[in-house]
Image (cartoon, rainbow, N blue to C red; front, side, top):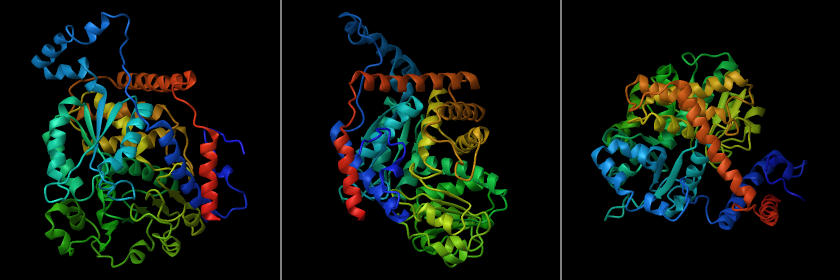
Length: 483
């Protein structure tokens, strides 16, 4: 068969008579096999190219010595000048110790490079932001992962960057790393697994509730999983009007509540203990008990289509909302949740309807923070970003199978950048004060330029199209695996 290189319609690659379970598994296997093949073909995803011109030999003397001495002494006398005289003002470090990579756990420091490069690629293409992957070894002399090593590394590296994106750091270390660095650094430190996922989940939930005709303050919400993402999701939902008495959160040992002495005793788990103190006053005993008559189920837990049971979804309230966002395989297949009566179903994957993925969030929120040279990204900025995405999506139209903007909608990133920048200014954490339209237009221009550079390189052959044989081999392997 001849492949559409855009892979716009993955379903068309598989036989029409294939059942939904096999098709869902086959798509996952195909994408994994294809990813391995094309990463090997390209040698990764990122490269470094200059942003300045070389117009003749003496321009080297301008960009480097002796001319560049003027840059060094100017920044020496005013460190903030580094944001405008170097690429620092548009540069993000994607920092990870690779201890919690997607659903694959500890992948060793270099094992996270594929994800971190992917994050950098999305920042560039979607948000016009430059980024570099920094996968570090956080193990101490005893061989255990030490959050203080990550904290010290970021503090040392911070003068070279305009913001830090923490990624794939295991719980509970991730909480200490984020909270200490937010206070210690004078640039935004953002934990995308936690804050980014929470931001986009809140955005999707806002619109899902609109379509269901329900209010945040009234609905019964159950969260499966109490990792960095879901604990932050719970915090943002409560900050945006959710009722803690109507919320129950589960970790691997059961529901979170005031009686969880194991969590109270572990000082590293202070974020989970905060949730224990605020939510689940009835001390729900089981997932099935809590989910019965629930309006909303948000799962970021164990990957696999049987983690969330069909009967749980069947027991939920009318017009129920199910977010099953484990990667790479959701906790229940969307078609199964729909068959059991779910009104709206979302996953973290782009090959199903309603992708709730932080890729629609972090390029815009970081761009907005960078453009006003924010000192930090606050929870208020994250909530504002969620409403920005939800409002943008509602204006262009939402349905039960299309609750939120996708990565293809270019202007969502410029809009959220502007909204976030205004929130930063209002909270007093911005170094630079700009108007909404100015931030929007600057972000839009940078995004347009970034995309044009990539497309021009593709047209010129500097980025080569992968051979069709790679796609065919990945598809054949997927079909054989589910046969």
